[in-house]
Image (cartoon, rainbow, N blue to C red):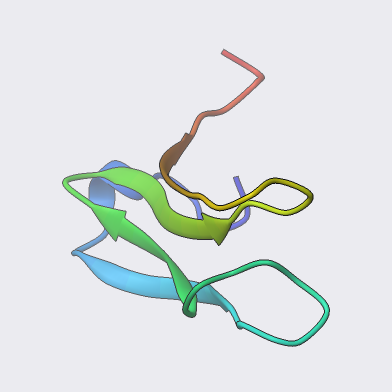
Length: 65
């Protein structure tokens, strides 16, 4: 993992995905370390449908384990 072992790090923001006119984000989305896990909350406006939004919580895992 690029940041080493997340279990050894305090809760902090390590990245950010910014809302823009060319993506469907409802607001900026931070990548953060919380409780030793790398997580990202994303809210997206659905496209090509009448209406709708979806909220996702991504948890990043190491593929080498």
